[in-house]
Length: 346
Image (cartoon, rainbow, N blue to C red; front, side):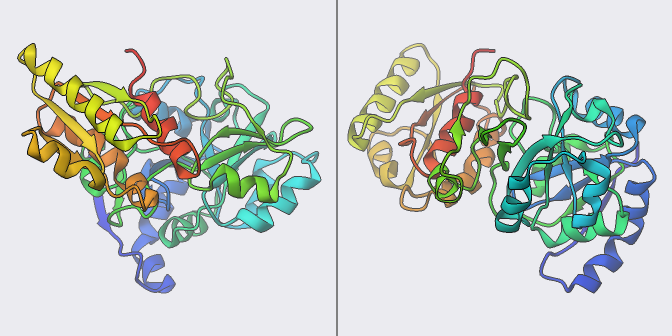
């Protein structure tokens, strides 16, 4: 397959973005695969109403077909194609607060959405991204767009254009809009039962969610794949990745990381440490090899760099790496959710 690359700066005017995207959007509507930017990660999009197009997504990614996809819209009127008539009232209240933005809601689906989009479930995950390029693309295509992250299944989600190279020859279009602003996939909340339930933490912290949804249930122990990222190993490098858990003392964490690196070195294994700015000098003085993900005082910076740092382990030729843990509050909960999936046993 011949993949076309299209550079679209998100700082252009809406009209300029739309002009650049016209042919790409037409192809998306008519069954082609398009990689496009959102505020969370790059997505691999197809017309959500065409079953044969959805099959192409699973083939391009090598993704298990029981792993549901998120449907993206850019106009509230597109909900008519996606949701059933018996959507709970709280859905309308919550989208007024969170959309456009990085929150996905799982609700009963309409008959127009093929079962392959939802992994055979009668519910669908849907969100309204805030990125101007994704909004323009979906509006021009005039159809809801099913899109998982635009990576080979199991690999770290793509947040920079260079990450999309692995999808060349697998898709029809790649829209390059530079580095993604947030770098972590959307928060997912299920409204399919009586009480809203958090299925996946994301850029909107649990603390912020609970201010708006006080009765929100935090549940990450589902046996079925009710939403993307809940069943299979994700975000993993080819290298073996070790996690040193947070223990309320950064010096202690750094010491344990250093000890782990020394033990690997005794086995003639050079490892890469994924650290933070606060511990760089500690590892530097010991002659250890490290890559900082950012400062602990700005976890959004760490989140933005997380997947790129995990990908760098393989790109730099390491077979083993060690990552520092984070306190599981605020955005730290989301960061640790992704790290834990990356270190799950193969």
